[in-house]
Image: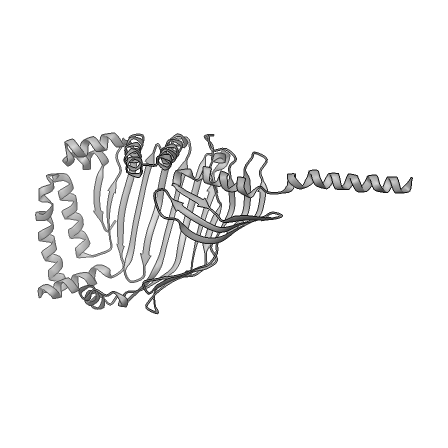
Length: 395
């Protein structure tokens, strides 16, 4: 009797294990299939040689990234740690680790380490109109990146950090990124004229950082880049901002469908032409809100004036005065009196005391892209009025 009870318990344990194992195992093939489906709008497909699953770790062995119509880029083994099913046929991944990069081509070597993505979510379905249907991550980062040419380091940065945060009630996203401690050695420039100019400017090396901040609202489809700045010491800060509306989930879905149709068409020329037409049609759905580009000087302007002036046999101050007289003549052909006056005044103010100069476009009300295209084709001189263009300096 005791032996029978023991035998029954053993059989029950074996049966329980048999039923439990499939439920707990991660289906690596299904995970990659759903990742590619969610990433279809980018036109990049992940392929692999093998998928190895060990508990909650999935290793994509021999991974390759293939852009639509392009050649596959060999990545190596990608490791997904902390993989779990999310209960909605999708997956969550705690950390995605990429192999270090060390590649050499034409005497140029690129190395990068500690490449990873944090808190990745892979949706089970992509047809819904919520953030839950999108491939999402919360962080992306890298360690040092170094580029050497013929054994000499020409570019480096200490690392990159990007963050994505969901708004309350999944109303949208905010995002930011920083590329830190960027250094570039310009002494390796081979063009003789450029090399001479760099030496005269005293800019054999430059260092700084690149930063970006923005947001995306689902309901309005407003995509805003609040900051995209290249900030280099003893050079200056170049900043770009813009905002458009209409970049909705429906827009993304239509873009995804266009990409999928293009990839499915075996005739590449025909596929590219159809994709181009589709994208032109999609652009009609967007609305322009604002844009601006600005430059805050950190001694670059005076250096450039001195160098260019010396080439003309005059001082930097004399060169600035010459430009003041030349600019109105150069922009007179625009046939935009208001804008011409703004440009002339801003240039004069900036050259007298280089601090900052900015070109902005802020219409009183958002302007549909078709209206902008119509103005560009029919009456290009009305564009500044349509977009509310302004040019200012030292503000």
